[in-house]
Amino acid sequence: MNILAIKTIFAFKKDTMRKLRATVVFISIFLSFALWAQNKDGSIHVPDTLDAPYVRITGVEVIGNKLTKPQIIIRELDFKIGDSLATFQKGKGGNFNERNFYPGDSSELRLRMNYSRENLINAKLFLMVNLSLKWIKDNDYTLLIDVVERHYWWLFPIPKLNAPNFNEWIRDIDWSYLSMGLFFSHNNLFGLNHQTSVVALAGKTWAIAVGYKIPWVGKGKKVGLTMTAGYTNMYYVEYASVENKRQMIYAPNSSQVAKLGAKLTLRPGLYNYGTIKLTGEYIRVSDSVMKLDSNYLAGNKNSNMSLSLYADYYYDSRNSHSYPLKGNMLRVFVNKVGLGLVSKDIDLFYYGVDFHFYQTIGRKWYIAEMFKAENASGENTPYYYQLNMTDGKDFIRGFDLYTLKGDQMYFTRNNIKFELIKPSIRKVKEGQEKNKFKALQYAFYLNAFADAGYVVNKFTDVNPYNNRMLFSWGLGIDFVTYYDLVIRFEYAFTSINTNGFFFGFGMPI
Image (cartoon, rainbow, N blue to C red; front, top):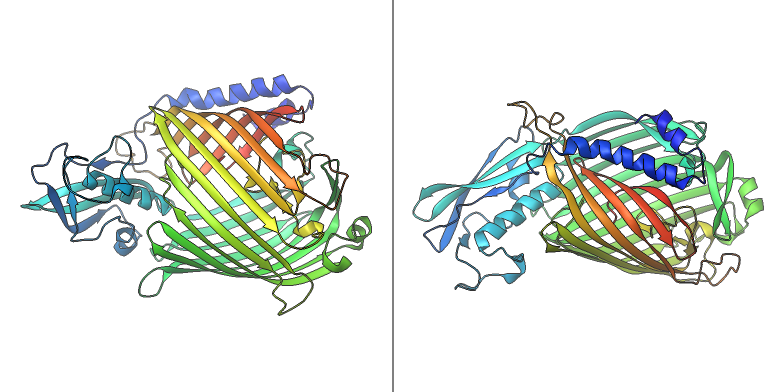
């Protein structure tokens, strides 16, 4: 479907069924070629029966790593070289860590290998990972790791919408509200998983940003470092809300933001992580914004400077970071905005908890749930610094056309999903199975969802959906492909008597 077709479909704001029918056609095109299923993103190969009660892993051989250093791969294993792994069935003897068992899977050997493969996929260096064993002698085996590396460097044009979000822009398409730029990145420099990126935008909004990430430094390889710098000159600013509708100003130089950041990532264990991030920010808004909302920034000023310190700890056992189906993630975090060192413009403290749960409930059936609670201390938080339940990863479905901002937010998203097309790759000619682009990897999931959220805002009475429990429910289809791309097609109904079709990008939970 070309851009002109999309524009035609969405030109009629009230013609919801036309939009829905067009979307079904769009999805059907994907489903038609998706029937050529072949393989998922790798597998483990273990004999069904082994005579010995234990297998000792005496070495590791890596195949297919043209760039990635072997030590980067080996560090992701769920066991160490020299470990003995049980091959007997669960409940028939032995005593090993029960936390590694999925329902219906029983041997420690198989499960440790499965977790190791998932860790390697989550490293985001490989399209496919296959693990198998090679017998050496007696109970000694070598672990064979066969990988297909991703394409690591990218250079491509990127669009930037001068609008609050894609769903709002597509209901009244205006191509002049589009900035264009270039994005360059390399995601495995020196074969050590170092990442660098540069982005530049030109148009009504223009920006430049650079970043460099060293995933693990030091002898223990348990500390990572990320450094970022960026400047953005915004053409549009959401300066207030009335009846939970965004009040926007569209004018050159409406907002100018400069940021510097340094982040330490800690990994004391395979599934335990921590983050410490220091950010310096300078923001300045135009006189027009100040006339519309003098409380947009702190102190009724047209510029604020702040130094912020963010810290979190989280446990993450999800089988996939880009689209998980099993496991859990629990994160607790604090964020002090304004340390009083470079400026006393702002003094705010945020804290919260974020929990995600994923489970298989039957063949091709899954459930996923998440809950997040966040609070901001202080009185009458300036609009720019308020918590936002319609932005980024903080949202409930169906409320994309509204803004929900305040000093506290609590929300949950819940899915029951059915696997329409299992993780697969399209059949290709013999010898092209490992081609990074010929073998298109994909999956489709049908979702039934129910969300709920509550935003606390004690200092305004012009937004009826604040300080009120909100609900939404509906159906959707998730298209999942490699390079961590997830596109969602969702039809949502809400407790405020609205309904409509929405696009989403990124995993729903």
